[in-house]
View 1 (cartoon, rainbow, N blue to C red):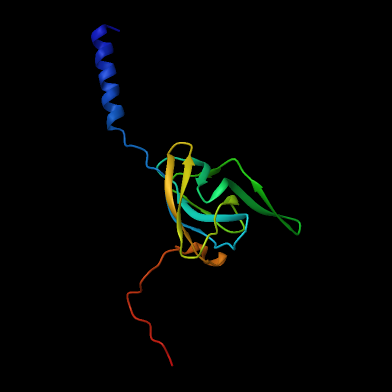
View 2: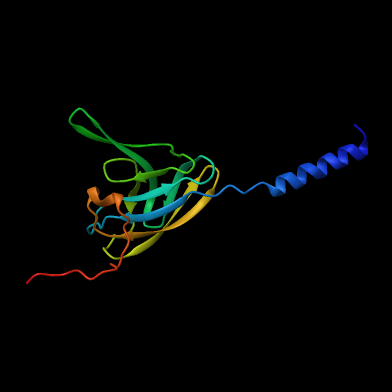
Length: 164
């Protein structure tokens, strides 16, 4: 290959790389944590993650509300619910996974403050490919069965009829 051919090939590869679509990062929604009581040492956060254009893996999380933040799983072993730290959570491209009570979740160990209903706090998620994604965690009561619904305030298009 001549020097001119190598230069043309390098230029063509550079143009192709620049024209390739950038991978989209995972989308994080409905991050929430349950309120805690004064002196409670641990807590959990729950959220939905929709994978971007390529598979990724959630590796860790951090938040100023706790000395340590870990990824955990919960599963039944016989009649006992076991909670264990895990090294990561796979996020398939374009698929939504849910971190929820009774399953995979973010665990706060050594809370440095009480999580009061209505409060918010920042949390940073670290993904293998997407890097850091910052989220706002809302402290609220939320029934585990309702976790499939967004944990957001909403308005109705039509007024409700209330019977006396």
